[in-house]
Length: 244
Ligand code: SAH
Image (tube, rainbow, N blue to C red; front, side, top):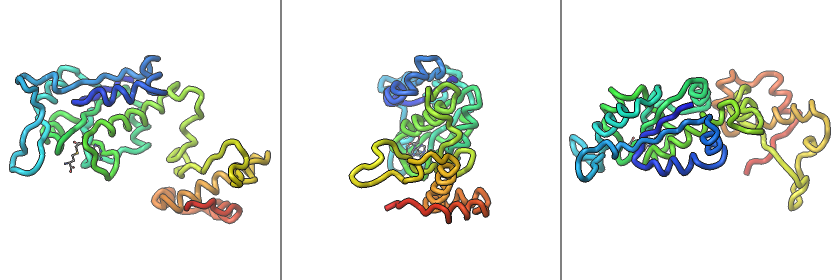
């Protein structure tokens, strides 16, 4: 999959995407990540990519010309998204949509943001990674790239299928997990996980996923249409773990 990112700090993204599974996806040819610096498209001696906002106000705005020139030179795969807190909220479903496609591209803003003509006449949409404000789009771009590329067949190595994770098919947060030792500082691993009753383990896992989702993401329970009779029975069979 080809992914193009437009950023004035390409090293930030290159570093992050050069390690671990993303790095392997790149060297293995699964991910063709191309970074473009709009500063390379400037024509003045100061390589200016920002200017004061029309109408006044604090901070600087990224200029349209270098971004248009960078995109026109690169001919990046579409859809092309601007990253910004004012966009559509990026989520697992959108990661799945992008992973099913041929590729996509991202434009990282800095300063107060980007000249709106980039959003209006160059990009296909705007993506936000959540209700927070960052200094620039680079961390957001890394987040989107990682969430999408790990869904590509072969990107996870021996790791289990992403279907059973949080926000996966059952629409719940994932249940808590444990590994050895069975007892650590006097805190034991739940007894059911140490036995061999796989049906009971499965019921425990679903119950804990339900408890956790009810507590932290009641909106996800609502999105599934509330609790079923089976859900209620599971919640009664297994009490919630503690979440201080
Ligand atoms: N003044 C803007 C924030 C600019 S932050 C506002 O109030 O909406 C500077 C840049 O950081 C943005 O152009 C964008 O590319 C990036 N950024 C900040 N928060 C982001 C978020 N939640 N999602 C995606 N990108 C974000």
